[in-house]
Length: 290
Length: 321
Ligand SMILES: Cc1ncc(C[n+]2csc(CCOP(=O)(O)OP(=O)(O)O)c2C)c(N)n1
Image 1 (cartoon, helix red, strand yellow):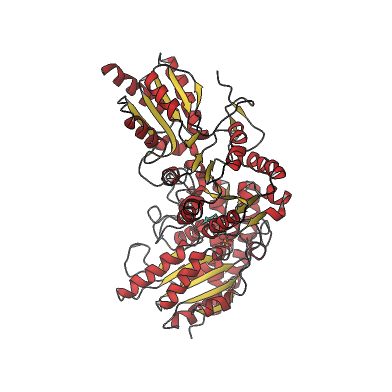
Image 2 (tube, each protein chain N blue to C red):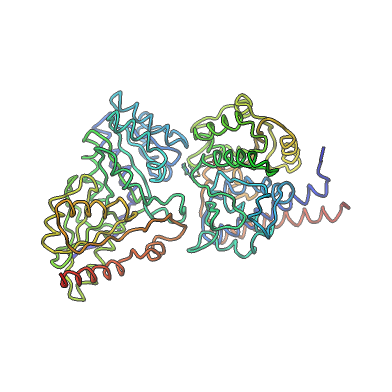
């Protein structure tokens, strides 16, 4: 089993904080954004782009690359920060988020942003697009894998469950999904709007391998990912237990943080908190020899 | 002179307040939303009538089917999502429940056309009028301001059938005097003129058309501005009369030039053999992108400046005829 060293784990946690920082800078630069759902996938996007995915930032169209489908497409800023850190485009570009003519619209667009494999923003549809990619890659005997990121509120959509049935029936073991269970959707708590019940047993009964993990713990996420990638004959999903708005006290775990305006004072506050954690992770890293 | 002013309320607040008022008298009004109650303003309705409001969650197609079922047992469902999801996402459900089964469903699609601005291309809806116009028996309106919304909403609730209300939810601009009355199927002459008719729809383009007409007047061209009011049914009589009178027609819509207002008017003129100079302002065949409303309108040549320039060309063609 490929277990992360303590050093690597800290590095990835730090990468997640960098993703938080740059996402907040980007959202702050345009004054408002989907802060809650962006912050809850920082660890996941760090793990994927720094450790798991196969890609070449100089050749984003490489047919041999792994594919990523951010089905909760409104959380583009988290992905853009991860892509910029991975070298797909200059970091400065992050500050053009949502501006007139920008190549970084808050909802992902494959024709505008290098490294985005498919456009999303209409919830539920990414699930089918990912299933189609996985099926097509299998038909072409490709070794590429498809990584699908779903929101929990998004799982209200019937299309998600059609895709889940389909992927199991087609035995798409090159498809790995993550559902960001941050317990909130736009209008409130998922439990109060359209309860999802036990997601893990739902996915299992639909024929998927399903593993529960703390979505803010890189080691747990990594182990769950490795286990699913070894699976054959069926797709797998990591049910990520997360906190909406994780990592900035202004929104962390609070209700009503789906899409919020960000003032320059708030941005400064977030910047301070996140930078503080980055420094502390750096100090820890310096104390360990890899 | 048109007195353009700013309301204290956004259209979404007016919409919710009016529905609350109508629901007082009509116990059958039932509101459904798909995790966008904070965006639609319908939280206010749900607060007032918790037993007659359901937030379905993010499942627009199911919501539309549920609306059909509620209608089948006598309710008047008022269904909301962003225009993109209220129409594109649920088309077969609208057809089955609303057209085939002829149920009574009132659909509110917020932020049509370019109005979704920062939400970008996925949320921009340039084809909703075209789609809905092709369905039999549907009423389509794009209320220009709160005065029009207040006047039309009771008529829409009262008439059995499917109605689609495009709603620029954050609009505060008011064009009409408070006592103006509107009727479904009756267009409104906003500004009289003799050289050309500009037929516009909705808060953005009626405003642009008025500004264009003012610009044109300064250049000695008298433009009649007509607010179409309801895209379906279309006020055929008024449009044919104004076309015959002014001898040139330009349409302006917050929608694709394919299948929307421009197409509807072109079909009407052609059906009546009215071969006059004619043009359409609207989105070309393409998808939207992130940007402010003003930026996008400019980028696609849809502001008052382009309306005026196009009108000048059409008036010039008239002289050549
Ligand atoms: C089909 C569709 N319906 C509605 C929306 C509007 N919308 C954007 S995000 C969102 C809530 C998403 O909740 P969730 O999936 O839990 O995302 P997260 O909390 O992770 O941001 C809604 C309703 C949309 N983008 N697509």
